[in-house]
Every structure is written in C-alpha cells, then in structure tokens.
Length: 144
Image (cartoon, rainbow, N blue to C red; front, top):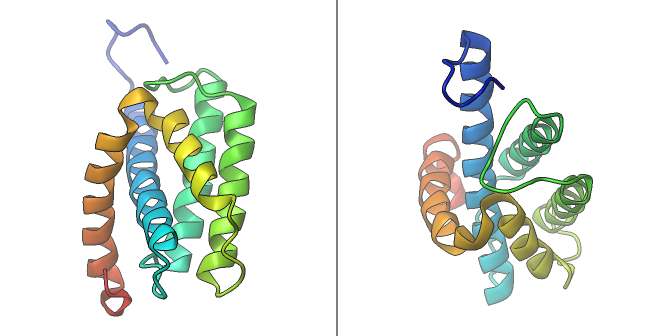
C-alpha cells in the first residue's frame, strides 16, 4: 500500500473494499456463531457456505496484511491466520451438525481481538447486525 497521503490505485481500492467487507462479515458471523453456541441454541444461525467462504476470504485479507499490501487496526501475525483457520474448521464442523468444540468460543473471542483490536466487542455487535441482514437476504430460511 502506498503512503497514507498518496491516493490509492483502482486495484488497491478494490483490494481494500474486498478486505473490509470480508473482515466485517467474518466478525459478524463469528459473533453470531459463538453467541449461539454459548447459549446452547440448536440453530446456529449462520449459513455454512457463507461461513466457509467468508472465513476463507478473511484469511486471505489477513495474509495480504502480513505481506504489507493492506493495513488494519491491528498487526496481524502468522499465528493469527492459523488461529482463524482453526476457527473456520471448528465452526464448519459445528455448522454441519458435528462437534461443538469447547475451544470454539475462546478461539472466536481471540480471533475477534486479532481482527479489531481492543474495541472488538462494539465492532462485533455492529458486524453481527450486518451479517444477519445479509444472511436473511440470501438465506431467508436460516432464521436470522
């Protein structure tokens, strides 16, 4: 990415838009899933395909940040990307009717902090609102 005072190229703007959207919706889906598991809900309220696609996209955005092509509110490390992969796998298992690992909720909280920094709780609430709206538009029978 260029210096903050330099304008972005069209490709850089597209990458930034893509990454921002991926991170926002990932934050929402993570929050929704973790809350549903914590409450013991039967319906986890996240479409499994939306979960998988969004978490893969955010892993890519995190990798771009490590490469220096993107900048975010936190410094992303390889460990953060690995944590996100683990969260994606545990979430996918739970959403497909498999095990609801006790590791999932603490991992979700740690991943949110990696993405959004100390203000992650506020951002996660807002992201969950948008993720529910998008999920309802594209997956109306999901109940969210």
